[in-house]
Length: 133
Image 1 (cartoon, rainbow, N blue to C red):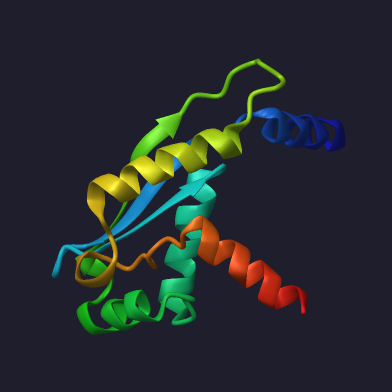
Image 2: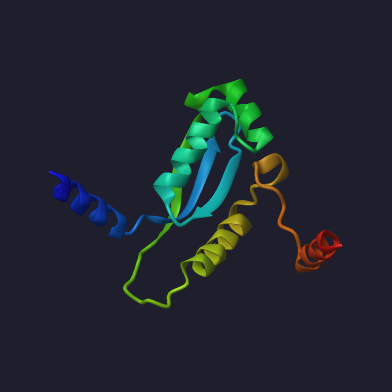
């Protein structure tokens, strides 16, 4: 029994998780939150748990969740990356590229969504400089 449990655990750890781009869509006002993840089921589960607990870090999303209720939201996968056997494949880089494409396509900031606008390279460098002093 113990050996079987170890075997199942090892098999689970070696099984690649679905990765890609996800969104949480509010059916009441069509606002969306878009993101990328190396573990799609895990990130969607985390967001759902935080929203149910009332502790989601995105205050606007949490406020709408509280206002409209859980039934007004859907958790969706927009794009999925297929794992490969290539050892040097950089999934994080590919996910960042895909996420940028979806953010450009959906424009989920301001009135259209819950994402914060992306900072320019210069803004990010300025923030790094301020944080170092």
